[in-house]
Length: 467
Ligand SMILES: Nc1ncnc2c1ncn2[C@@H]1O[C@H](COP(=O)(O)OP(=O)(O)OP(=O)(O)O)[C@@H](O)[C@H]1O
Ligand SMILES: [Mg+2]
Image (cartoon, rainbow, N blue to C red; front, side, top):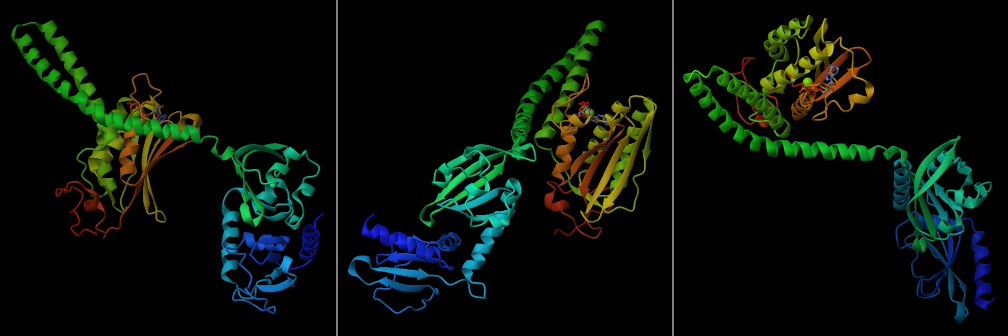
């Protein structure tokens, strides 16, 4: 070993025994040796941890950052200084705050973190790392290899190639925990000058379904755009078809061609059906000429109930309306709310098929400031594996269904800042329409949101001040 080498290894042993962050630095500011405490402190501090030592040989003296410099050797060849950082003073310094903030962040982020020095000793680990890998907090300062010595090296969280500074990104790593596999991905970062290694472990089980979700959101967005785009294209030719067919119908009648006239009549009826479908499409894309205002839910429900009850009665179903005042008002377009109710009650009738009850109820959640309009039916319920899909456009289990009903409802309600929830536990279904309410005295966001102001509100005078 060279003279210098001997000198350095002696220095290393010396600083290793010091209880404070200590390092030996040459006159150019180059770090020759340092102890673990130094590495750890440096890891938690900002970049300029190592400074150039003072130009002259001063007596040991504190500098503004409280670091002590001790000249070690005055021989020209090895001008070195011992730099010692005292432990943090009683008051919390800026660096301690920063360090604690970082530690807190690393604790809260849902990933396991481990920081090692170049020798593989544990400098720091977060709680999740300790929990996942069963490492006691007391293991700080010990070589990680000791902690996992009973395992083949590659199966440990920190194999040698990573301790040596090898970097990996999202390397799959499976850890057996209580006999169950924990599927993780591992990142490792060599923390350059600090001489430490950071290992991060993320759980991929949490993201197992994310592909599905992204795919579905993608599909829904596409359908929405497609719907808005194509609906108009379909509607225009339909309008002229309808016009000409009506002419044809009249002239066939004039010529006494009764059978032909009947065919044309049927064609017109089908065209009306297509038109209604296109209307739904347009709603999916972007609601048309919506008139938002402050509404009294019981009044709106009361207006549509006779229609719903009539339809229900045809199927031997009793429709019970328990939606009553007092209720705080909501913001919405009464026609759209009726359409939502119509769709949902139609579904309920189709689910019950024959004989049963459909009940409309309301409740209020003062904490969330929402009203819940519940449509409960005594039908067969919705199987759990379908619940997630019933709001998808075109999802239907019916022979003649379009699968657009609930998609449109959800869209309408979401535009009001609400949502539709499903409660179905095997028997019967409750569709819950959740809507934010406004104070009775509040002017509400009605006009702010509304595209067109409506003055003929059957449910009371429209508020005139705008928030
Ligand atoms: N109350 C309910 N009980 C049981 N299943 C329901 C209920 N409401 C909806 N569903 C299920 O959700 C699916 C989607 O409903 P949605 O209203 O969107 O379309 P649809 O009723 O099938 O077709 P359309 O509304 O055009 O007639 C239905 O096919 C049905 O399987
Ligand atoms: Mg439906």
